[in-house]
Amino acid sequence: MHYQALALDLDGTTLTSDHTIQPAISEAIRRISQQATVLLVTGRHHTAAHPFHHQLGLDTPVISCNGTYVYDYARRQILACDAVPREEATRFIELARAHHLNIVMYLNDCMVYPAGTPVRYMEAMGRWASQFPDAIRPQVKPVASLEQALARSSHVWKFVVEGEMAEVSELASHPWIKQHFCAEQSWRNRMDFARAGNSKGARLAELLTQLDISPERVVAIGDNHNDISMLTLAGLGVAMANSDEPVRRAAQHITAEDHNGRGILDTLTRCFAI
Image (cartoon, rainbow, N blue to C red; front, side, top):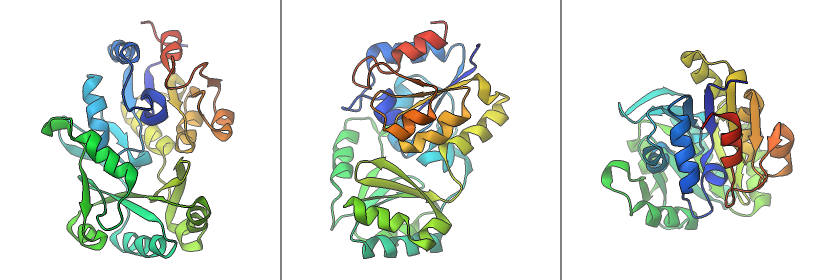
């Protein structure tokens, strides 16, 4: 099979546990980008994916926040989106608080969390982001009020909540939440909530149509539940060795090693002439 595109998840797939790309994998992706379309398809905000897009020398748009929007770095422009309506965002915040969950809100140009209830992984992301120059620095901000931040923003891309999984699951099963949001587990104690209908697979399919690339000609690689929709879309869906069982079942192939080992490298060298 001659593959025309490579769709890559970032965390747990292209990135190691310390949020870096191994040199051999970086070089392989750069070589592939000279012969095929390489797309980053991530749950991350576009500013949090920017350092890796830059490192890989890509000129393609990024699919961000689990398919909620497509962003073009070169033009600094949103190409397509389906954001959370403001009224629904307000109601979501109320319900998440009622379940005693930590809340992160992804806005048009930054990720915010309440300064009064610190979210450890976001604080860690803020420290990580500080190493990058302004042009590619991820934007992470503690705010006094989520409601005030919401009022100032033109878009709400998604929410991330974390806490006791029983509470997280209860929120996800709330009838109003199920009607208006798509919930996908993104970490052991964490779920992403985007607008209902958004998924990595749906947005990837839309972008592939615009690029005149058949899904059959795509290799997609991911590790988590939010990757399943794109693994089943692609001609070759590859799950990481570190994936949960539902992700493995959705894939046609599983890597021999996890993201801290050879990871995606063997798949890249097998599927593309590099």
